[in-house]
Image 1: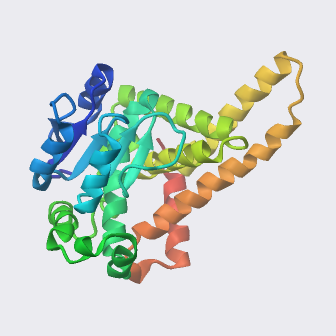
Image 2 (image 1 turned 180 degrees about the vertical axis):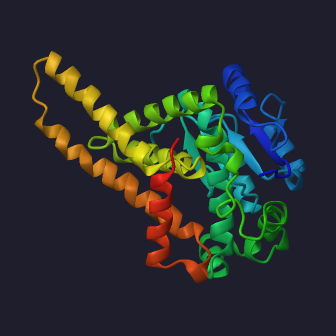
Length: 293
C-alpha cells in the first residue's frame, strides 16, 4: 500500500542511533527531519511544530523544563522513545519505547504510536478525557485537533490502526529483511521473558513492543508460538547444562498468554465498530494464524 510521507522530527544526538533511524525508516513513507544536533532542539520543535506528524526521541536531548513547556502549550506528538526498557513513561502521552538493539522494528513502532494518538483522539470520550488530563487552555485550542485531522487525511479516515501497510507485512518482505525482523522479534521476546517476573515495568514495555510489531507486520500467530517455544527450549538447554532445575519454565506460559491476549485486543480494535463482534475477532485471529511467513 502506497502512502504519503509522514514528517518525523528526530531529536537524537547519538550518531549510531541517527544512522539506524535513517536505515530503518522507509524512504517515501517517512521524511526524517534532524533536530537533535541543533543548538536548541526544543525551540526548533516548537518553531516547526505544524510540519511534524511524529517524533523520535533520545532521552536527555530535551530538558524537563522543555517538556513542561511543550505540555503546557499542548504540543504533544506521537513519539518513539529510543532507550532501555526501564523506568516510567514520562515524555509524550502517545509514546512507544524501543530499545536501541531492536531498531529493525522502528517503522512498526511509529505506526503504533500514531495509531494510539488517532484512537485516543477519536474515542467517544476524547473531549472529556482531554478536559480531565490536560490544561483548559489546551482544551479550547483548536490547534490540538489539527494533528489527528491531518493524519486522517493522509492515512484514511480510520488511520494506520485500521489500514496497515501490507508491503511491510512479514510475508511480503524480502527474505533477508524478513530474517532480520524475526531476529529482532526474538530479542524483544527474550527481553519480555527475562523481565517478566522480576521487572514488571520493563516486561510491560517489551510486551507492548513485541505486540505492536507483531500486529503491524502481520506476524502469524503460529510464528508467535514458535518464537516462545524456541526461546523456552533455549532456556531449558542452558539450565540443564548448568545443572539447574527447569520446572519453573512452565510458568512462562503466562507470558505467551499475555502476548496472545494483547494481540487479540489489537485485532479487536482494528475492526470498524459495526463489525467489532466476538465472531469477527475470532475470524480475524484465525485468519492471522493461518498466514504463512
